[in-house]
Length: 140
Image (cartoon, rainbow, N blue to C red; front, top):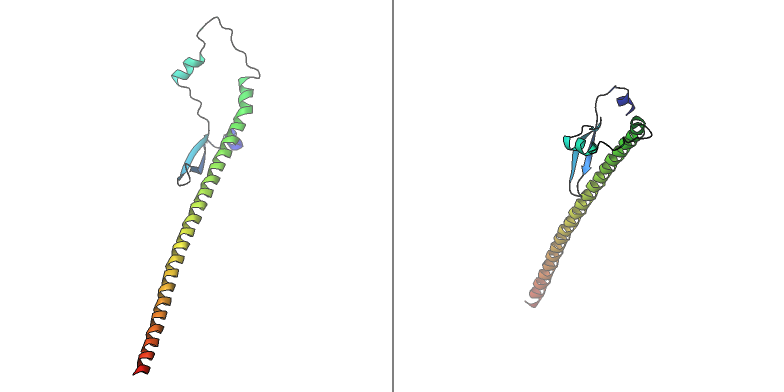
């Protein structure tokens, strides 16, 4: 912000990961400085007093002093919001990655358990066949 105020930079933009939902985050590039200060025609109409007899409003402190005090806070708040969204996006991505890893590990465990049971069943069947063949040969 200080470099922008010193006119070293014309525009300040921030790239961050915007958090839409747990499953959806998107990379966003957002301009934070300069602020969009353009008023539309409808905004000007709502600001302009309709009655000429109304006394002119006096603001204290001056508008410039007020802007000087508020704009740094707005910029800091905007950056804090962007950092929080990026952190939420990172945590959501980690959560999804860990859930996928857990699901894959459980699927692998199920496959290994099935293979183990098939091998065990084959071994039992082979032993029973050997015992039956032994008994049959003894009877002969």
